[in-house]
Length: 154
Image (cartoon, rainbow, N blue to C red; front, side, top):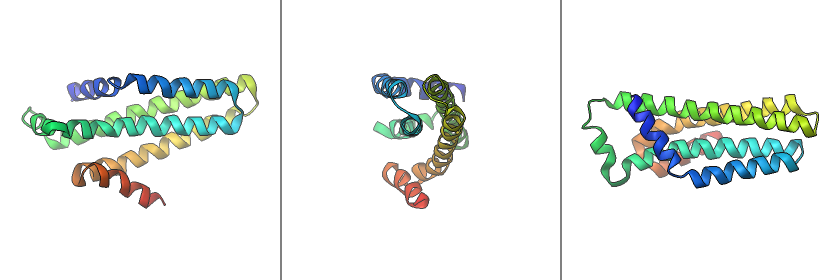
């Protein structure tokens, strides 16, 4: 399972330019904006991180890589558990980034408690979203797996 987590982090960091741009936009907006901007930015970072984490499933399906993974000594149950662990780690990174943004907001405004709370709640909401999307994406495919949780949320 450790190897699968390492593989997913390598897949995630293969798109590191996009992640750098997301974090740079978030930091720039945190330094220039007010409390409402920070709420938006923390939710933006949480969404981008969870979508990136869920995209590793489609990378595994790309060119029948999932078939190759199932030839290794692991079960589908281990694969699914690893995806849950990976999405949880990514959500923790989103929470930590929201905390950092809250501390940066404290330097500019007095809304630190609100920003930290909103950032944590948004990261947890997208963690729950990914917990719903993982089995749907594995069962029905990439498009349906990402559409159904939004319909449920609406």
